[in-house]
Length: 606
Ligand code: F6R
Image 1 (cartoon, helix red, strand yellow):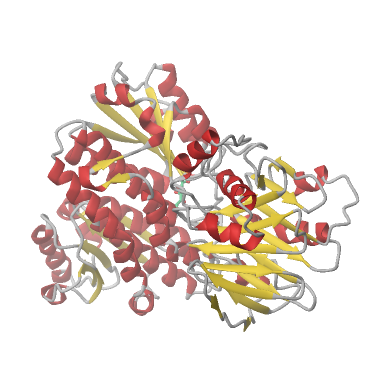
Image 2: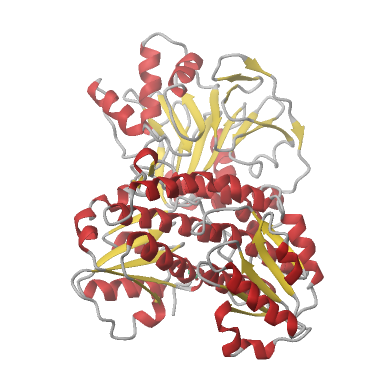
């Protein structure tokens, strides 16, 4: 998820572009760059403040394209910052998304004599356009010709020095909004930076290519027919616009779950062989084949992701796994033998305890791995190898989409390790297929947001909650409780359902509701028994159950249904339902769910 912004009109472009970019900083802040025809590209690691410092000329240009990067392919440094140009420095491209076939395209272009400056997937686009222009196509047709060769996702801005007033933009999977002004037009990844200038917006659809000048706008599709995309008058304020129209980032980020799952899986499944292709682990593939123990470290939600990872990796790959709170691991004397690998899970890649746990593991000579969302973060840099989430920045303090992504990546790691061990091809193919269908299932859970809200409202006065589950649903229960307490400040505890008689059952009375995560899996009957025990003690039960399970209503006060999924992946759907429950419970009390009291997004101190 990057921020893109463009202007074409009659005013000086540079201040408009810089201001627009600064309003998109929540979308990415690894590096920034700008191109205005007639001037050299300016790029820098960091965000808009750094870019502004480097813009030392008096720029007279009246059009330009600008970018804030959330790194995916290539380190977050100056060379990889956008815009990227062709060999002649005439065509410049800004890109939000991932080009999956860029390696093949790059090889062909290199063989054809093109020289590349960066490691990015984006740069191939500029060189392909250059090639098409040399084949005598005009700017517009050269772009269309190029887009037909790309596989992947993009929100693109393209500027051509020889046609300085025109900016071409295209959308495939990544959002593009065109703001229609009076003698000036704007393009951005969302409405936020445009609203100040015009409220008249045109939202592009996948496959659209728009040709924008100061006074005209036309939309074509890749099939070359012109299409009519009516504009709308937007009434959002700037805050709402940056949240995509949602009242909170937390809700927006949960709603991104299907896309986040797709991004985590993109290019990483070999369907017919039932294998996972994890480029970030290839360098240590041999060592990974020899490991006889994996220790997962993380904090908070990332630690719970680790617990799910333990179940996944042990059952699918047969590798013994231990999960530890990073804050404990670093202060005790862990036994780390030569074939132990230590895997850190961290959204920010900067959590101090997790980082120190990795450093401790290194001191013991362990192979260190990371599942990290923030490219170039300290944990990503200090681990020997790893897998990026590509989930985009998470702004809400409570981790939501990052956890969904972490569990999906852990399934891929289990598949990766499993297929070099005892996991059969058939089982691998079944898991790959289940992963492929996960985004659609996640969408179905999200569609029930209002239903979940109604259930949460029934319990609005409760001050204590218990969350229970078994097997994969046990870490989900821990996470459900954490999410609820951190955003709503009520007391919530997560327990393994089998533990009820060992203590927690004593707390149950009519004022103490329980959320039971009870999908139809191999431990279904066991959890149902625990629910009956709770109801016998007058406790209310909210079940998270599999769609079509009518019987569960007999032992529950309320049921939230999730679609049927494989035992391993159903947990992702339960987690999304639990996140929605916590969100609505707190948001309807008017609490600031994006910034819960006493908490920070990234815990870089002990
Ligand atoms: C809970 C939450 C935290 C983080 C934890 C680790 O919603 O967000 O528990 O999961 O602070 O953070 P990262 O993943 O950045 O290491």
